Image (cartoon, rainbow, N blue to C red; front, side, top):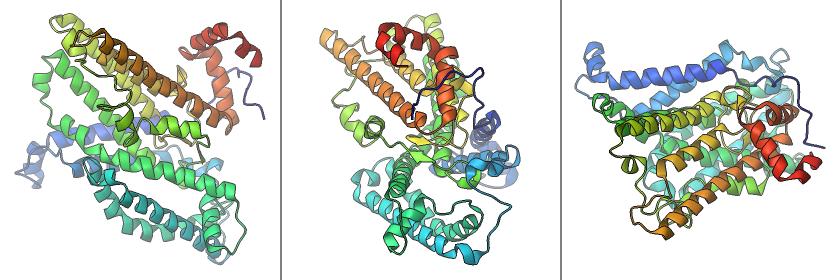
Length: 447
């Protein structure tokens, strides 16, 4: 099947509404403001009157939970996502429990075995029991019993209304039980989805507390007088938006919300490109002493622009703009954000201008903030190495983008239409596409 589509007359409609992301952003902002103002609010409500701002890990976790609940509520009440055919649910055709109980038992066996395996991997991985990951393991450990208990009524209820209850989890359960025929392709899809969720959920939960604490405890009065400090505070807030809403996306992979994982990326190259960018793999590649560390003897924009106040202000807001685009790209996903997955097609927000706004803005931020070509050692070797290595990092993100496109092009005709439309009309994508066609005429003929 060809993955090339003719450009449609109009940009395809996004599978995610603008409203769900805005509700999440509003709720998170309110949570942060309340956390900052708690020394004033606490005595009024009679709770924690002697406490300072609510900047602890549990406050960060609660903010994420409340943000997720608000977004899920909007999705159901306003967007009515639970009624979409793409959920695979027919609420009007509720079958008797006797018809589906065997299917549900098989599926629960598959789910519980999957969680046991993921838990064992957590147990084996040393990095999960030190540093930032300790908080994630505590949260996941606390959630284990509720997950197992609540999975029973959830699966029993859902199987009664699903059009095809024999989904990926059922096929894995059938393989384990050995009583019914299963499809190994479906088993692989099941494990790709849960490997993604297990790996990235732990990472996202682990980084919730740090940025949240910095933003809640920040002295805004002092920051507004210093472009560098204000810039860092703006970056921190926008990264908190990205992390908090991104974490919601990994946790709410639920079919009634139409946020389930349709498929995980089937390409090994896609997994390699993505995993290179996250712990523990990133430590040996881009971290301190890593193979392509690009911040060797660098000091960043605040150092090199020091003494040029006007330029510092301009640079701070430019970097804040790039970070805002990065956060906007996550907000646009609503409750569907996650790496390496197909969960519907986004065509709104920053995805109107480029197919990969997060990667583009993130890499532009690194180039403009780190300034790898300027080094404190006055060493040409350091400058060249840093520049080449950051170029390699940008190349990895380009690789990620292409593998993600290959995955989505093979999954959804709507994405093929969006891909074609962006190639012709996208504010950023279209000029780049024309440039690449000029540089590679053979590609134009192939298209």
